[in-house]
Amino acid sequence: MSVYVGNLSFQVTEENVRETFSEYGKVVSVQLPKDRETGRMRGFAFVEMSSEAEETAIIEALDGAEWMGRALKVNKAKPREDRPPARGRDSFGGDRRY
Image (tube, rainbow, N blue to C red; front, side):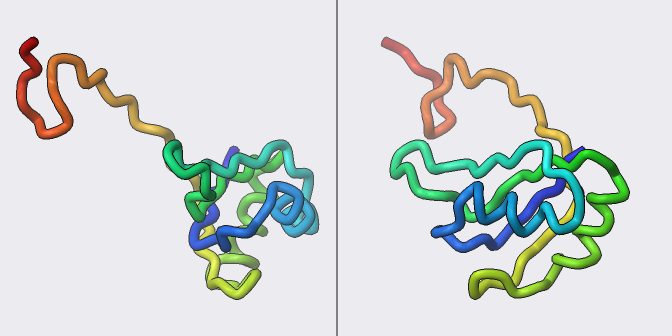
């Protein structure tokens, strides 16, 4: 059970997210993805709660709410899509031939 939290401030920390979301129930985990090249926050998070009722409460309370100067986008997280490996292709979609 996880919620997606978008439009986060780039200064947000895991502690900030845990503190705010714990007001609605038990936070199981927080994931704050970072850009691979720059190491900067990507502006979104995934928050796992201990029950679906807690997730629903968070979505209803925080979707559209202003937090740290930004209007949050909060909804149910969608399952990650499996992508086939990009073998044999370069970044422009062509075949790699060495």
